[in-house]
Image (tube, rainbow, N blue to C red; front, side):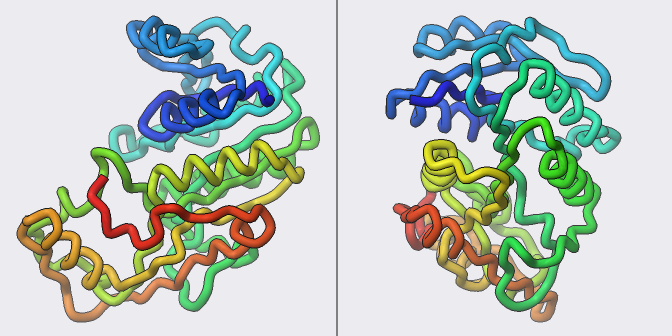
Length: 269
């Protein structure tokens, strides 16, 4: 049994907490909304209000006591707040991990760190992400992996989809979408949670893992088919564009013996 502290109780963090609790782990969970604390506690979690900014920590720091593994599921959030210094925010968390002598830190990263490059992309591929979000995520990864006070694991998640979250609902009917022949590199919430929990349960020290479902039709093929399933207008694509590589999950498949249960992603929830 692990004592797992999950920073962030959003769409991914809460699903991870529920799965970990069902498997018998003790779960500590944070929320940035005070009114959510009681609801999370009623579900059996050690829930606590805790909010990080670039320079401060709001809430009681005793959340960090007696945690075996800390999981960071806080996204950059630069779409809503383009000026956010995500690196500085994560540094606040790193400081707490050091102060409370937490030994293991898992960070949910993104495959956006690879940018657009061709071929098969593995954990050893160059980090070419050039968006503001990707650049900050790359810096966070590097800061965690070079820290000597704890072991870090980086999980680079593909595009997340699952309950109440599928891109076809926002892309339906849109025109001139780019990169029609670029493959999708997605993962269902169910499998993302399973991979993260598998890493926690079979910790192997400082590691980096890709977590992407081995199902890579082109964007045009995939979204056209999903539009039919959802009975929505299909999006219209440009005829040319960049073809991104296929992100490989062989490391989690063979080293961790993970198995993807949502294999073809032709699912709306």
